[in-house]
Length: 402
Ligand code: AAL
Image (cartoon, rainbow, N blue to C red; front, side):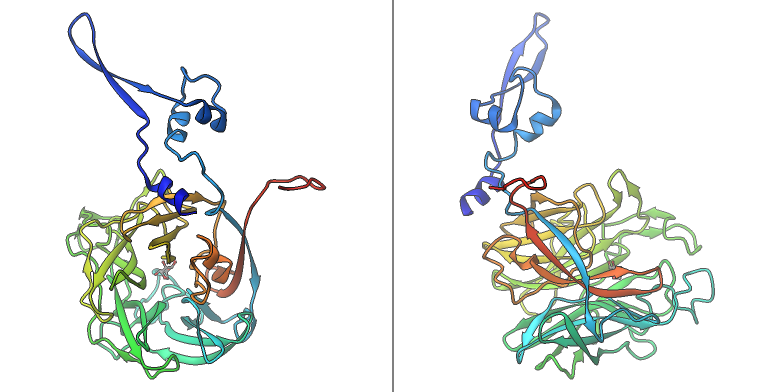
């Protein structure tokens, strides 16, 4: 396994570059790619002298690609209080942790229909994740859940989190529980900046103490064009996270705290891979911060909700939904420089990982089961459970596998 990993992250020197001088003494660079017989056979290349662009890319892959990073999945209903309930939005589940023999998880909860931005935003609920508080639930088996009540409420009027607190993650360190989550300050218009807040407690049952200030904010180097409430009109887009910092998830790593997040950019565009969504990381010496954004940001060129876990001394990341590298599983030895390790047909969204899993057993062991959310409609989302499995063979009915 490790050998394959090192193979995968290595840079493959497959090109022999030779310089030929033509009769006019102009220098041209001609690329000569050496293909071994083994490579030719593995990749099924017809003629070594005629390599398509796709074959040249394939030659950069390691010889032993394997399927450890490949999985398929299915999604099922939860039971108990978290079964679908019209009128209530439950979404963006956190990871699950174990306490006193029960799984604990936190999520965004709101009630009522969402009116969007067309009406009176002072009164309306603009998104299903608007006017949310953070609630939590427990379960003995991960299937039947008991809703325990509110964990972190919106702030008082005028506070940075007075409009909504949502999309939460849990981190446990030295007996202290930390919830990091998105915050929005009223009014919730299309240009509103989104920040990240933190709350901590000595027990997963609370009470929670909230940070007085956000622990992460958008880059402030974008410039809106005009006064109109239009998030696509900009003089300057600014950094990948100039508008919103979303989906925070803190991982203790190499003696520090790595806060992974999704950035949204002012003047976001749709490119050849979909929405311009990228991930960043901010690093702190202590769980409460200060969190300093990495100069290497953005650390992904694709993705949506953050789904990261420690693996083999580095960090693995599931990239879903947006961008040319969506539906890939990536890994980085340093938590910053990620390479694609596997590509999947699709993946559950907004994953709440099972942090009790043996994440070192297999690269995707932590994904064997967990939580996700699904849209019944624009107004109603509910939390469900996913399971995944590694795929060994592609077999026909009645055909024996390996
Ligand atoms: C999700 C997440 C964040 C966004 C919204 C709720 O997919 O990326 O949480 O703010 O949608």
